[in-house]
Image (tube, rainbow, N blue to C red; front, side, top):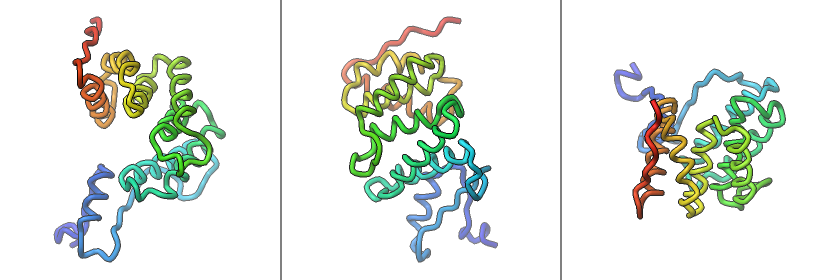
Length: 193
C-alpha cells in the first residue's frame, strides 16, 4: 500500500533518498533509512567503524553547512577503523580521513587539518601506487585546495583504470578532469593494450 500510494520509495542513491525526504512536505520530519550489511551494535571490527564513518560522512556531505556533529562522528569512526585494522579495504579509512581533513571546515574537526590530510593522502599514494582510489582522492584534494596542476598525473593514472571504478568514482574522476583541465584540457597517454 505504501509503495502503491507513493508514500514509500526505495533507492540505492543516498542523495535521491535525502532529496525526496527533504522535499516531501507531508512528513513532520524528513526520514531517510539506510540499510547496509552492518551489525546494529559495535562489534569491535574495523568494518563496523568504517561503515559508521562512511554513513556519517555521506550524510554530512549532503547536509553541507548543517552537517555539524556528523563531521566529527565521521572523523572519530574513521580513526577507530584505522586503530582496529589499518589495512582494512586497502586502507580505505585512511583515505577517508585524509579527504575529510582536507575538505571539512576546520572548526568541525578534532584531530587534523588540510595539511595533515594532504600529507596522509600523499603517503598513501606513495605506499600503494597501484590503488587508483589513492590517486583519485589525492587529485581531489589538490583540486579542492585550488592547486590542480599536481592533480594531473594522478588523474591520468586513475583514467587508465576508469573501468575498475564504481560509477560515483567515475563521475568524480570526470568532474575533476573537467575542473583541472579548465584552462588547458588534460591530455593523458592512452592506456597500453
